[in-house]
Amino acid sequence: MKYLFRLPDGNCIESVVMRYHYGNSICVSSEVGCAMGCRFCASTQNGLARRLTAGEIAAQVYGAAADLGEKMSHIVLMGIGEPLDNYENVLQFLGIISSPEGLNVGMRNISLSTCGLVPQIERLAGEKLGLTLSVSLHAPNNALRSSMMPVNDAFPLEVLIPACRAYQKTTGRRISFEYAMVKGVNDTQSCAQQLAKLLRGMGAHVNLIPINPVDGSAYTASDAANVEQFRSQLEHLGVNATVRRRLGVDISAACGQLRQEEAGG
Image 1 (cartoon, helix red, strand yellow):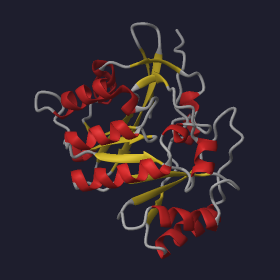
Image 2 (cartoon, rainbow, N blue to C red; image 1 turned 90 degrees about the horizontal axis):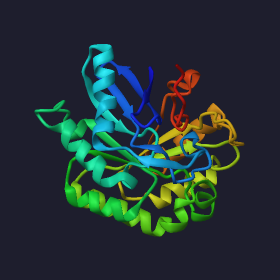
Image 3 (cartoon, rainbow, N blue to C red; image 1 turned 90 degrees about the vertical axis):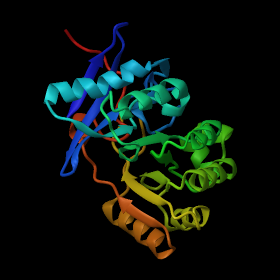
Image 4 (cartoon, rainbow, N blue to C red; image 1 turned 120 degrees about the vertical axis):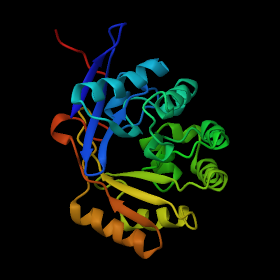
């Protein structure tokens, strides 16, 4: 279920509620637009308009809960925007949402996704919040990752991966890596081997996500057989990997499809 929220200044953001057997999970936005420029993501197509306040992030959770008349048991900071690019407001939001006076959502039920802003990852490790950190990786080498994600030019893999290892050591929490599967781009057996080598010894988990369709993007999803071969190769090489279900594609609410929209009426 996708929600479109109109903000007081007229900007609009999107959130998505996913219902599971264990409760309701809401994917919230942290910014209006995004400055990161990832080639496969709709959220960044219009650039960054502004960062959301802590209250505006929290309002997405409270609004959806009020509309459904149901508690949001899990929070995912994986909507529009780069959460760590809005560090102070996101940190304040986490305090609000986890407080007994707020929604009392446990930190272990909160996930934050980043494209890899290394200074903020290092700072977040020091907070020792206990949340789940997901890193959007999407490629096993710098050349390929830079072609997909401009942020890699600033924070290449030889800087990002050690920061992730340090985060795990400091917090005791396993990191998840997101890997969007793009046909003929990053789905080869060679890529699987490079990825396994890159993550060796981390005990990390890799979420394989057949890329979702986005207007204006030439990328297409890997075939199901290719995705399974990739997953199997990672497992064979000692890396835990699963294929994420593609939820919400039909309403443009899936991973990479959320964008700054205009509300009618």
